[in-house]
Image 1 (tube, protein in one colour):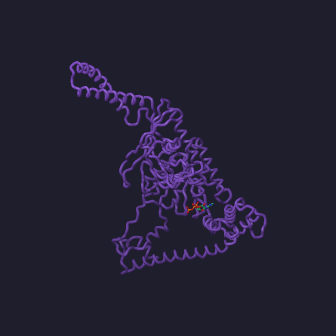
Image 2 (cartoon, protein in one colour):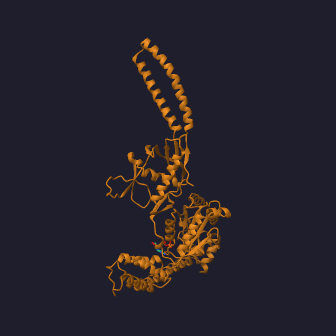
Image 3 (spheres, helix red, strand yellow):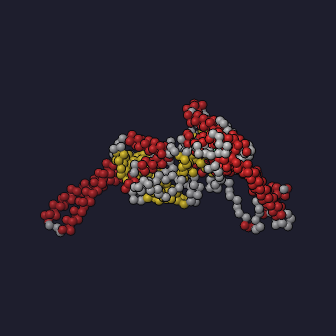
Length: 541
Ligand SMILES: Nc1ncnc2c1ncn2[C@@H]1O[C@H](COP(=O)(O)OP(=O)(O)OP(=O)(O)O)[C@@H](O)[C@H]1O
């Protein structure tokens, strides 16, 4: 639920200010009558001009304060002020709203950044529509801006709230204050709804991805980096028949059945694990699904050393309802048995004093489980996790209720390979001028080439991403793509073998260095590891 702070009394302790103002006014008023009395005296007694000037000044100042008081009174009585905090989705809505309403017209201060995929709600500063700028201009809105919307006067102002000190410096949270000169609360609701609708409309062609900038962590706004990606059609994801449809249907049904979950007393959340080799379409599926269901993604990597249990909890709790909470490579948080062995097999430093401390593992399994299904797991959210190594995940993590659906992604089947070829070389793009040897019907030719291509790629040996990489190198010529694939497969096998041998050699060298290091007279064991399991593992190998 989006939140914005409301006040009919202004935002800066207006009640106290009112009391003080009214006292000032009263005293000013009382002062006025005595001033007039004194004036009479003065005119009679012909006191000097300096005294008259002084009295005139006092009168002007009193008048100024009275006007100010009246204006403030009016403002407080006849206005509604709403506060939008950075980090809340409503903040994004209102930013877009003020950009579209061209409230910035009189703004003279901008933050200028080079164009990139990060979303900023920049404004167009060039009047010539043909000018394509290389930078984006975001108004600071530091000075209050007055504008009219649907017949109502409004004022907009931006401020920064100073938070606590952290390792990353002082945390600041931006706020936007909108003052509407009306007594009708509906105007505010309409404004927020209008802003939300515009936001949804503008983002229709994109998928919005919220990320954490773990270098500049902000406890008030953990999702402090927003990117947009062009929406990817579902049919551009090539998977075995039925796999994608069933996933989309499942997610759609989940979103529609909140009442059923409440009635059945089951928390309204659903967890999916997509697992399989790299480059098989796990992440692409989630992005395409988010686009199709109009959902925003909140994506987190557990690989960062800065993320700990409490931050994870905070991040999960700030994902709004109907958002997708995505943890990519979820196995990264915990070492596998193989990894642990590898770490023990790390080359030991020659000088024990130079041994670097290993980074602390700050995410615990119980912390992660808590986030997925415990106190921190908010309802109405889709949870997605991806991994290349399902066998490294703890059984507790995989149990239903935490992960409700596991979907396996495999290396490309012959049918997927064929579909990938026809997606790369659509009949529409290659048209009548497509000139193929054999000069059959155009459509038949592409189909034939696709069949030849698929038959030449061994099933379940290459990922879709690898095949896509190959096809990209021949994107203008389906004939070359189909003709060259046999040689490519051979070359890939040779390269793969060489890579595996290099890796094997690297491991062997590490083991040898460890053995030398632990052998009698070989430098001893650092930090008393001799008596530990670590020493035993090494001697055995
Ligand atoms: N099944 C697929 N259908 C269409 N494109 C795919 C498919 N699999 C991979 N790709 C393409 O390969 C690239 C990498 O895909 P993606 O990131 O989705 O793979 P992944 O399985 O998530 O990999 P990783 O496990 O390394 O994160 C993308 O450009 C994507 O378009």
